[in-house]
Amino acid sequence: MESKNRRKFIQSLATGVAGITMFPTFAKPKIQKQLDYLYDSAENTTEAFWENIKTQFVFANQLRYFNNASLGSSPVNIQKATRKFRETLDGFPSKYMWGGWNDEKENTRISIAKLFSVSSEEIAIIHNTTEGMNLIARSFDLDPGDEVILGDHEHASGTIPWEVFQETKGVKLIRPKLPILPKSIDEVVEVYRKAITAKTKIISMCHIVNTNGMILPVKEISEMAHEKGILVAVDGAQSAGMFKIDLNDMACDFYTASAHKWLFSPKGVGLFYAKKESQHYLKPLMVARGHTDKSIRRFENYNTRNLPEVLGLGACIEFHNAIGAEKVYSRSYELKNYFRSKISSNARFKLKTPSNDDLSCAIQVVEILGKDVKQMKTQLFDDFGIDCRPMTRFGLNALRFSFAIYITKKDIDYLVNALEELSEK
Image (cartoon, rainbow, N blue to C red; front, side):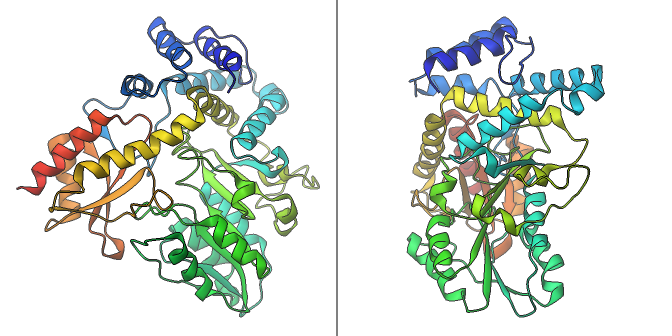
């Protein structure tokens, strides 16, 4: 974001100046000072800068939240903006539900498209990743014996739609086994290469698996698949907002993500990307007046919907850009590597997420050797106020930690000290 635009956004947060998302007046002097810091320290990457960002996220008393991969928190200013949008809607319901916010909704679409380096005519604003995966899986008229590849680490919301809408028709779901700790991208690509047959029609895959935070090489798999006429659909629930994503470069046909994780949006809003050349394969999940619309908007034709949350997503992307997208991406890797450096030499811990930056980022999974993961999760919360996710599948027996931008190095130090104390008991 250019300095002028960054300043304009910060001022809109602090004073209520009408901008793209019509921010209301809500910032107290303290918040105004904190948000001005985003501009004044635009090139700042010190820990003090990130401690300031942390003040925009307010959690329950004494809670140390390392569970963003399950569900993120919205910054205080976004919460207040969304509430103001809701008040505006309730003040004149018919106006704002049907037409009054058309420009704002389209501007949100444009901001999403810019973030992912695609055309706004390739972005639909939906509810969540689950809806997107249902839209994809239900659209295809596959024949009995056709095959869809789904790696064994796929989230249930990425597999159940294929089971319900395709497997019941005789379509075969191929479930190749992914390595837990691959050494290279090629090692993962080879798993998918071996799973492809002459009957393969679609590969449906996570960008980041939720089990151990492993990044899957979507670009390389997409390029391989397209050479064989195979389509690629991507569950981006764990990647959208964590690091830089250029969907044109990534080459997949479809990508869908909930925005309430790493983009910190209000709950119940997400994004759906369909490459222009691949949109004709898709059929809307819902139809209503306007069903003849040929644009990508046909996939979000709900008649009434949660527009305050949609505009809240637009505000979140402005917040993301105000901090600086490159800074967010760099911070994700900085926290990952800081955490790994703190525990890698301790023989009581076993990291179960790949170390290569091409294969993992701000989700890390660690086993405390000799300890039951569910018991460790409970003790971390009861004794230290730390919330995380226990992962038991695939023999992980490991704790999953998420390092969102509100996590500081002091927080990681606190986490590591807690882990060390529990490992010694």
